[in-house]
Image (cartoon, rainbow, N blue to C red; front, side, top):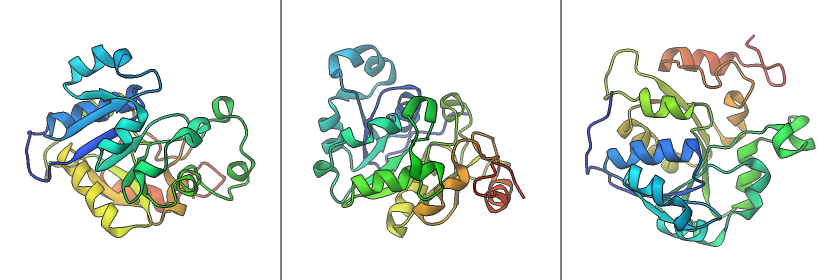
Length: 224
């Protein structure tokens, strides 16, 4: 069910990336009344069709980074170091990344459970407020599963991050596009809903998602 458009808490959202997740978030955020710019390394001309279908703006990666009050990163993990840091200084950065060794190459620190994907991004963006979100939901579900606030059995999405104020903004954004939220804790706890865990891309309510996050065993990929 579409969430009603509102100008309350209007924000500018830059999106670095233009794949399935990027376009899904751009669509629901635009319908919720936010001003959105998607981007890719090929430039705005390559985004002409998507921009017109979604009703958002298109730009370069640098332009999207500068444009957004909040900036969503949806590019593969192997390309994280191409993200411009300076224009993201002081901004909330939403990390939708996941680690797939076949795509990203082996990353020893992740294989040894010494860090998380979002902590790697945060090290690259030390002056930004990184929040892990949108990595544990399918693009089609972003577009289909949003429901109004207070809906019975409303779907909940997990987030993780170190900045309380940034999390509050993200909770408001997710509510506006149709989702409840479960806070998994600090950014270092983002492993709880990464690829391969029982809560990854599985529709859950606040109650069942909270239970699932608490039950996950690191490195096991299964619940205790």
